[in-house]
Each structure stands twice: as structure tokens, then as C-alpha cells.
Length: 295
Length: 195
Image 1 (tube, one colour):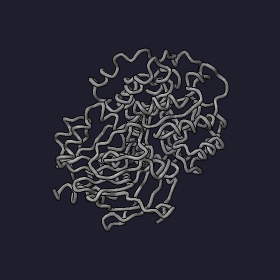
Image 2 (cartoon, rainbow over the protein chains, first blue to last red):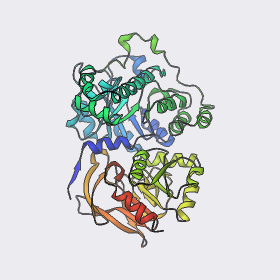
Image 3 (tube, chains in turn blue, brown):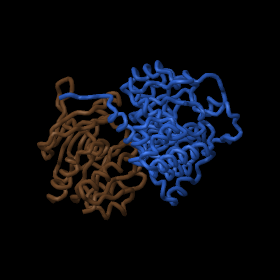
């Protein structure tokens, strides 16, 4: 019996299984265990959470394989890890480690300011960030099997995630209302392949799962993104930069499932201790904003 | 007949779509009160640890066990198969299941995501295209369990990937991700309506 691995269907299907869940940034095995025990559907292994990358500066790169393997040995849920935009050798290394998903991430320092990784060349699925529909479709065209809207990572300020979810959702709704002969120009204007633009116009959704990320720090933030149409959420610095990570992580998981139930949301929002301090995106000089990386 | 789909996490919308394609009424189940008005229940694909934890937190484990024990038809795909297993290998420490099928299931048995695969297999005399994602397999079954489909791995070993025990059905793979409704129709026509 022939068995085919690394197909678009198993790559995209893997993301389908994460829907309605929370993917948490962790920097060591202890944090990964806390995330798994709290009900995370996957962990993102990285050396420094975005808040620390922001505070410490310098070039941010792929994590040490030792650290990723320790996390793989500790938890049974999927383990994801980040590579720099365009750094296909970091991706080859992560593939050899058998991580379950690769995040080609603007949170790390880009390796290529023109091209992204050709993701069709890999057996491991990729998730990529997007601020608008054109960017999402360009990433899907390069082989991304999952999209996350970009927020401004490491800030605890949800406003950018909100505007990017509104932008992606709004552009999808606009395409669905167009005449078929207008889709050619729409594709040109959003610099996206016509075939994908046409598919979105017909189905009213992205061809892959859409999560949201960046600046989510509370259960209410997670539920807000779910009500905006996200399939699930990534929480980076928001959990392990807070006062009581285990408690907050479990609360965010519950809020993502019961995102439409204000009574549950009130209940899980109680007594969580200090949220991450946060930075207003407006106070960050434009050249230091991560969401604007990617092209 | 109203078919509930446990909607705590995972690809429950795809199951609801498949139910609608079969001409039946589906509904999302997040609470015991919603479970009460269902005639049957589907446990979707997803992360079995997260689903079990949420079911525990929102007091769904005992009500689902009680309904399964009193004959409610149930079907689980992938994570759902894990949740219907009486015994688990390679679960997270302390991971709970609803149980019901007298079988031992090995979690992530085929390996990590890099080992996820598509394949054609025989299901109740149909040729079925099946999608396996970090899938479990069945290690052993009790005498009341019927093995419907198996997969042979590269070491020549055969592993059950679709099983039935009276009103309970489980598959390692995800028929909700393909357009073929054979498994959902089998659940509705053979498992639910034969009762």
C-alpha cells in the first residue's frame, strides 16, 4: 500500500487539528510542560520571547537544536519552531529535527529582505505571518500551509492584531462581492496570484487555517480575536511574562473555546495576577516594528 | 436524529459539514445541557490532551461516559479515537479518556508530523482515501471489537485503524478532511440507525 507523506493535504490538515486552540511560546522544557498541562494545542520553541528580543536587541535567530529536542522529549503535543524569513538552511535544520511546524517569522531578524523560503521544498508544513490578504496569498503561493495574522509581537498591545484581522477579513468580504471580471485587477492590486484570489472570492475564506498572533495578553484578547474570525491564537510573551503563567495559560485556553460566552470569559478573567506590562505600539519607532517585516 | 459534535477544540466544523452533506442535523456540543438533546455524538480530530482537559474542566467527562454506557452512538476520529479508548499508550501523564471501546490505543503511533501521510485503504468494502495526521493506531482489541480497516507499516506489521464495538466507531484517520462521506454514512446508517 502506497503512503504519501508531506502532501499539501497533510500539511494543511495538521493546522485544521489545531483550530480552536492556543499555541504558546516557550523558551525551555519547564515552560513547555506548563503549557501542555494548561491545555495548549502546541508549543512554539524559541530562545527568547518577543518581549525580550525587543528589550535586548541584537540579531534574533533560530533556537539551539538542543533546546528544541529537550522540549520535544518533554511534551507529547506538537512542537513548532521559528526560522528567520528567507533562511532556508535554518528550515532544513529544523526539518531534520522533526519539528511539527516551522514558523517563518518576522519576530526573528530577516535573513533575506526580498525572498521568503520556498516552502514547497519541505516535508514539514510552514506557518507564515500576514498583515493583509495579498501578503497571506503570496505566502500560500510559496507553500505556507497555515497563516497567522501578524500583530506587534512582544508588546501586549492587541491593536495591531485587530487591525490585521480586520484587514484580512475585509478584503475577503470585498472579493466575494466582486464581479468575476473584476478579480483580475483585484489580483493585480493586491499583488497576489489570480488563481488564489479567485478561490477566495468563491469560498469566502482563505484556503488554509488562519490563526492570529502578536500582542495577545489576556483571555479577553484571545476571545476578541476568535470573535473576529480567527481559527485559533498564538500567545507569545503574554503568558510567561505575566505574574502567574500556569493560571493565565489555562484561562486563555478556556477563553478560546468559550469565546462567545461572556459569563465564562468573566469567570476565567478573575484573579489572574499581573498581565505583562506591555508597550503601546504607537510608542515604538516605525523601524523597530516587527509586523512590518515581510514582503 | 440530532448528531452532536464535541466542539471544545479541533476540526469540529468539518464534521458538522460532513453531517450536513449526509442530510442529517448536526450541532456543536460544549456543555452537558447540549449533550442531553443529542441522539449521537462525534468526537473530532484535534489535540486529545487539550480536549480531555477542557472536558474535565467543564464537567463533561462523566455525562459523556454515562451516555456512552447507556447506548448513545458515538464516533471518534484521530483524537476522538483516543478519547473512546479504554486504555492508552504514550498518553500525556494522567491523560483521561471517555472510554467505551475495549481497546488499547497508541497515541502519535505513526510518528511526528513529518510522518503524516495519505493512503488508500479498504473500509467496509469501499476503497477509501484516508488522511493520517500524527495519527494513533490500535495496539490490541477485546473480543467484542470488530476491526474494519488496518494499515501495514514498513516493518510489515499490521495495525487496526478503524474499529467498531456495537454502538461505538473509531478511526485513526480523518474522513472529515476529504469529500468522501463513506465513514459518516456508515456511522449514520449502520451504527446509529441499527439501534
